[in-house]
Length: 297
Figure 1: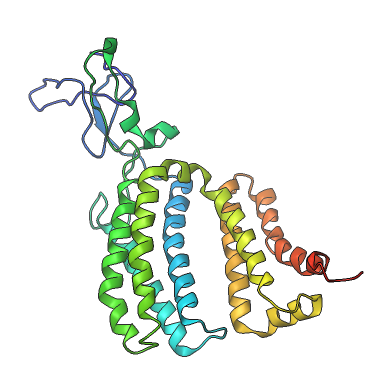
Figure 2: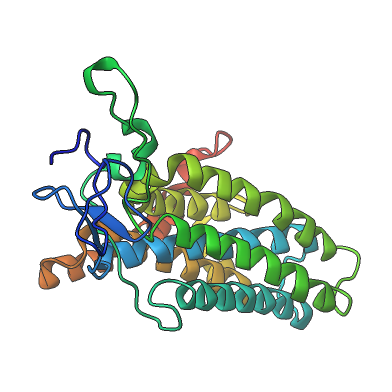
């Protein structure tokens, strides 16, 4: 009755018979005691939801980055804000549709298989070969639905962008804004490929990536200022709405990374770490003058 490998199981038929060892159907996972494929009935953990949230925020952040880059406006305008709100609307609708299409269909709840190890994301690499003879193929989605729901979300994002964005682009910045559509047609397939290959690695490393990328992005934002004096950096940060929103966005990402790392397992101590969110920006402002080779002290 035993099955080789980590993921091979038997399907129990209605007549009581068992299939040969093989892959479990989608939404099922092997019981390590009976080796029978059983339906997944777990609910996603907080960490799982944060991971899915990271994938959503990643698409939204890249959309906004390319919109800001192709428009090349250093100040906010109504038309630029409208374009960014459109991207937010596309991503939000894609997220809702991806959740509604997940089992149970039509609800915002998800039943999932619990992630236990990195190998769960790469069952393709763990097909056993008993006695070094014929290989048994047991490839399956052991992390159901964390793997496929992201693909559904990416597909919905691309479709909605192609449906909605052109109508908005005709009204606002018709020449430059269409470049944001072309950019999305490239970066969304690239994100699909990245998720297909290193989705498991991202699952375990995304909290640290969020913190690191928010630090780098914050430093890059300040480094674009021509005047690196303390007074100038503070003045441009607190007086220009665009800079305020960008800085608050960096702080939110940093807080998201801290929340994903700690999961607020110790609510009091972990919540105190959130007070460190403004520290990187303050550190840059206070030490920027020391990085200028032409500055004399």
